[in-house]
Length: 143
Length: 409
Ligand SMILES: [Zn+2]
Image 1 (cartoon, rainbow over the protein chains, first blue to last red):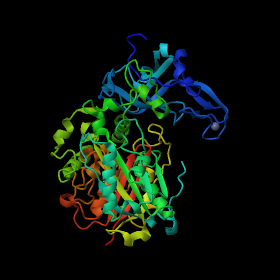
Image 2 (cartoon, protein in one colour):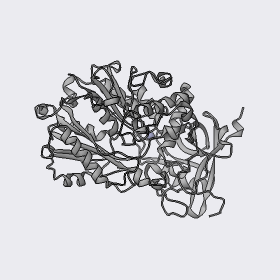
Image 3 (cartoon, rainbow over the protein chains, first blue to last red):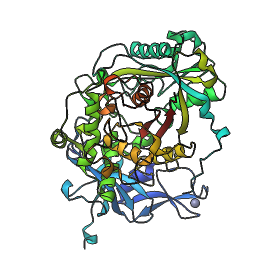
Image 4 (cartoon, chains in turn blue, green):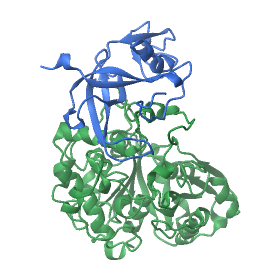
């Protein structure tokens, strides 16, 4: 692991969630999607909660999202954690309720606003085979 | 999302067959360094004797969260330890944390006596988070270890820990920020929850923090996770709380006039998750709160004492809205200035000091205080006018439980 990669607690990756944590290797933000009704599923599951189909595929989305809410965290909860940083819930543009909790990086925390357009980037933890989807302001969406 | 109607005719409101007959607490302190089982049993025996019963009368046992090793200090004792320590003969028992809040353990007991499975259920919750953290602070009990650790996040924490979000403070902070954004709520308004709690704690000899807190103190203390500062977060402590839930036809065996369980709220209609719930400015409290009022002829205006969870100050704001004491989004203006929620106001709130100032007894402290007030045992902090209707509410995020209680003399 390169020394510039910040400390993070990594997820336990298995069959059900590997699409999410490995997608960044190919630069893709991936979710489960119901092949029958088109609904994106997150967190990962084994059947579509809307139509109960088990016909589930993995699909990449655009990586464009909107910040629903956020907080600037100042508390050093764990050794090795650098503060302040931004924790946010973002909504992917593909579906009203396709949300993830993530960090907003690449800008001053004070610039983060609810409703702000953001896009995915990935933080590689290659030795551990985990690519963490993070979000950064989407300049192309700036008015 | 369709919401099943939880209104029921009276004969289906089984919780009316349940009363609260006794309540007790152990010593409570920031760090007591006592055996957590001892604290648990002190609370249990205090509640049994408060009800005028003996341990041989107890035939039911219920707790939250049950015995568990981690996080350290979160559970003082499980069912098995208390069962054996008191040599109880049980007709019904349960200990779990997948419940509509910590008070879910008491709600379960109400259902057990209503169903006739038990007559007198001892319900307990004990913590020793103060001692467990020692002088190292919260990082001593946080999941996940440190650089180089082989720990990997799973379950719902899989989606939070990799983003360095191990604490509910951060999850609740995001809800608060959404509320601020949608409704114009301010830190000065939120601060009234903490300041009110501290005022009440000053009159509670068992509270942890009793020195006065001004708005300046509140606004200038260090930030934890915006908009929540240190004084928006409850204080870890050591202590146990217990109540006895009895079947209504045992009233003649009891020492005190029992408190009637009027209506319960346990609903959760949205997704059971901190970040996937439909409305990020409220949460499960919305559904549990509205369910209560579908099960009684009483109205929010009838409530004379409100003891509502403040693990973080913002959660109390969501409970104020959920229980109908104000409209959705109106909790900020409702608490503005603090007079409405003061002990002599129209809705005396968290009269013992809440978890913010009296200590994080984790849900059960609110029910204990509601009972104390309905029994007129509040001493210096007693709400005047012999209150007859109280609510005790616990939980936040994807878990919430509410109890409407009456004491008609
Ligand atoms: Zn489907």
